[in-house]
Image 1 (cartoon, rainbow over the protein chains, first blue to last red):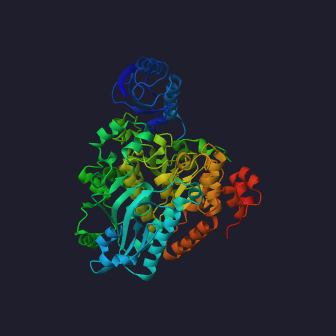
Image 2: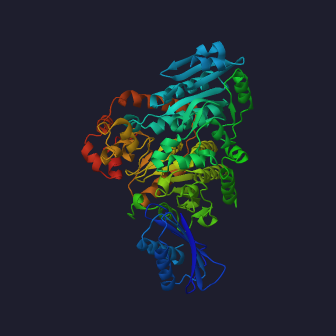
Length: 107
Length: 236
Length: 292
């Protein structure tokens, strides 16, 4: 297993009153789960925490996570990931899904 | 095998019928009558076996009010079989369990002794349903031996063996199973068995204390806390 | 009428599609991080919910407890935390005399956690009967391709009711295990038609093991659950005696019949080929013999 944490600057998230957290994905082969929660600290920064059973891809991870932080407003959140070998495309998709679930209008 | 039945029930073991290593009947334990069902000699348990056992339970409910039911377990599990699956083996097992529940609600105490192999579905479908579960120290209890676990999970045997030193859940045997709360006590195979079983029946209650035992003994540190946390959060 | 296929959805999507909007209140939700202590030691990633989401919800305004297993996570298998969540949920349902509905998707006990999941399922089975004794209906919904196997198959069989779709299967030994044991000649696990005819929803419904067989849509599953919610079947002596006779007859009649199609025909299906292709509702309406 490989574990690491990294923060990136990001525009502050518009946190809906109705939600305390959002979860996307599942831990399965080639997949990951993403939990997004409000962070007490740094409203202009997102803090990622990653646990993956496929070590050795940290650079690739940081690129995907950094990209996401710069394109989307997730400042003031903690994003925790449990990964079982997802590709960068799937990683980005799950991050977007988690943000969508968080900010969607549906209850 | 008759040796083991005789250890518990003496001459009254003759009241127990063995049909393809499925035991059913009535015997005497320390002067009191008991109903006996179970498996012997590591046999497999299938739909026909389950029906034999449930028939005995039903007979006990109907004709012997309040009589304790002793469940002996020495089974290697179920034989994978396409016909058994098609005819709904889970339902034969479920029916046996339901019969035992009707017995429990009618006031029959249910006590299990794992005497040999007590593995997977064969144990779940009756023995693990008792009010109280015991095992002989020579019994093989657990989900599956480490070699089989390794073959399915692809985790090396050496890794599992190393881990089992600190995780009794991965170890096969009566002692580790007791640490998890799966059995109340482990008994040596000696002359004290009838007295111990008799006392176990007297002490049995319908409360399932396995999670508490698992926490106290350290083998299952999370189960009780999680159960209670769910109960607390759902009450709020 | 929504046609979202139930079997294609993930656990949490199934919950959202079935319950009244916004009514699911999760117990021990992911942020609480109650996770497996075993998997990290085996180098396997953990899941925040240990593969089962549990909580309270309502369907058509009727309150109930609900669990959904995540089949993609270690095969939906049951470990220490997973089983403890199940047990706690069932005990809550028994305490409150509310229905307990399981969206089952599990291969059984989680091998990686050894005996702890096995004992946990045994505790859950006792808790199912606690619910039944309290008059709280227990309903197993089996509509995923993974099915309900091993200890979860037994637990499902102990519930008051089983609601299935043709995708669902209930069994003890899975098809690959059967093939390994009996040989490919006797049972080819790659023959999906055979596998589903052996353990799938249609056969279970025909044999009387599943009380309801519905189409593979979340609306059909929801309606099916509703129809079972107010019924409870506390087992008594008369019930189990009748069941003993029923199961004995089944074994006597079909025990030597290896072929599911022969059983279907013997149970009154006149056009087995058409019945095989029919959607669940059509199967129930037009092909299956009417239940008394």
